[in-house]
Image (cartoon, rainbow, N blue to C red):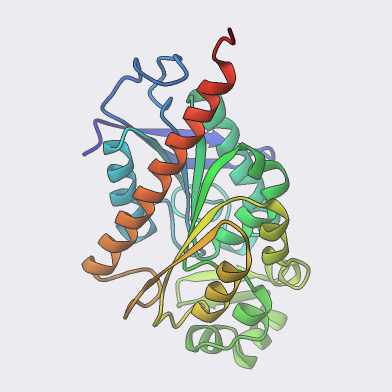
Length: 288
């Protein structure tokens, strides 16, 4: 269980304030490989949530953060603009805005904590994460993706699965064109600009160019985001591993599925951060 959780405000480059929670490990970091003495010196993990969620990701990110803190890692959760207690409105949510938010939180973590950095991105959070790979990727030790949106067209613009067909079919898209709003689940209204962006971006290409090792955890009964696309991409990109959760729908809502996702993710991240820290130590060791 995490020893310390601190609520902070991070400000994006355009002035939007982001609700952020930091889970610090019990250790004070005094035995950290980099000798910094900072609590995040064993590694810092950024948790990037999906669309219409918030920094809790339905509670799964809270429990993942607690597990990571127990492993000696600092976990940083945050709500994108227009989500949770962060500034902005749902109608103003854009991919570009989420990239600014991720940039701000990554910069905050780099300033405040030592050691390697990793990212866990859930669902739509994988879009901003993937498109940020040109600058974010070189900073990362490892990456984990939960039920990731890797193809915007087949998820939103020409949806193939029940959730997409219900929320982004002809009726909802007509409402978006006429009113400028598309209610998602009856509680979260998206705006036109977001959908204009979706036609321009291909997260798969960004991940492929980044060359970063990744773990994909995906439920094989996902009715929101394509399991088949994620499995195919993970089987194609070097260094990517795919972990299927039999019977799991989107979000790992049963305790057993969530526990399995957290377990495999924590093992992947702690191993990756440890290897990265060992390499950093070797690189800075005196040569005789």
